[in-house]
Amino acid sequence: MDKLWAGRFLTALDKTADDFNSSISFDSKMFRQDIKGSVAHATMLASKGIISKEDAETIIEGLGSILSDIESGKLQFDMNAEDIHMFIESELTNRIGECGKRLHTARSRNDQVALDLRLYLRDENEEVVALVKNLIEALKEKAEENKDAIMPGYTHLQRAQPITFGHHLMAYAMMFIRDLGRIKDALKRMNQSPIGCCALAGTTYDTDRDLEASLLGFDSVTLNSLDGVSDRDFGLELLSAYATMMMHLSRLSEEVVLWSSWEFKFIELSDAYSTGSSIMPQKKNPDMAELIRGKTGRVYGDLMALLTVMKGLPLAYNKDMQEDKECIFDALETVKMCLNVAAPMIATMTVLRDNMINAASKGFINATDLADYLVKKGMPFRSAYKLVGQTVAYCIEKNTVLEKLPFESYKELSDLFEEDVYEEISLETCVKKRISKGGTSVESVEAQIKYVTEFLAND
Image 1 (spheres, helix red, strand yellow):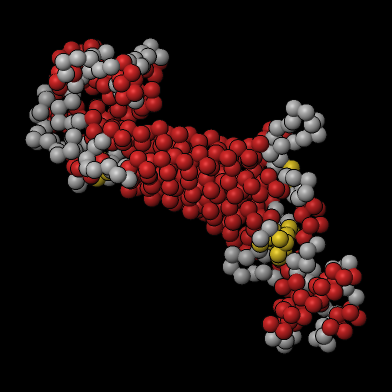
Image 2: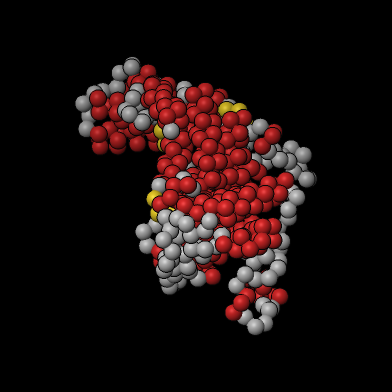
């Protein structure tokens, strides 16, 4: 395929250099957006009298036929084309003749590629948003089922205080709601049209950038042509939002790996989201969770790659920026893949309540409640804290727990202890009394579930 820019050159581009320069192997996925942008551009050019309405109609009809043929498989991408923009323009000219050569009036590949990428990411992130909502829904449903399932809460991976499994899952629901907000914020800032910035300085033609932006569903246009063609903040923002979300997915996956191990056995994953061993017949491995955890590093790498590409570029466009798409496309596909697996993995897992409460019964996770009991009886908190610490040490020495320590032993420690101490430090009471907003009581978890339900219904 002849290069559309070849007029300046006396010799052909070296084959190795041509392959190195080409981007159609990965930017061809933007064919719909490229054609959509070209239809809007032709419409705008005709509206301003820059090209005739007849030419615009012919161009738009030709673009429609190209779209139809690509989607049906009748037209295959020419890997000798430099990029998707050149491929479609050349194909258009082949089909409709000289008229096709008018399409590129008052635009450059610099603003065209910036446009296509914004359109592509806007379209693709509709699916990302839906997938995040599916995951939040799965977490909410599982939390509803287990809002009263008592388990140990941890700090430093040491048993700390009793919580409910529903409360634990709702923590992740809140994280993913914030991730959704970050993605939407990035999409909102991204929704400015760069088309009409041309190569870098704008154009001498009397174009209507606002009309073209409106036809393409943008909120506004970029206000500086240098910025319009050289900005990739929108990609970096999305990559940053993806990286943060993958971090949350990785933390959830890490807990799924731990919870499904024999050492915890708080959950059992569905066979549909587990694998076995080639040599150990007893194994049931949480490979999906492990892969999500591993792919997090991949998305981090995509973010760092694009940050590094952009960090030293003078204005305006530089060929380095062609590296943006592979980073962004890889992160986007990885995020979608992980979300597609995470939601059903959570939805189908079995919660082993008995194992959770058995674990909660060990580790003295009601010690804070015992201290609070003494405080309510009049003892200063620090004194109560010390006394309970001594009590725990005594229980360890006697191989017992606070709930089973004889009442006579409590009385020897302090006269403030009454028979009601056992009710006050039962795990059920410890959970039930944590009524503060956002806490682990069933009532509080129900309020969190209600919030998430309303968020998903109204978002």
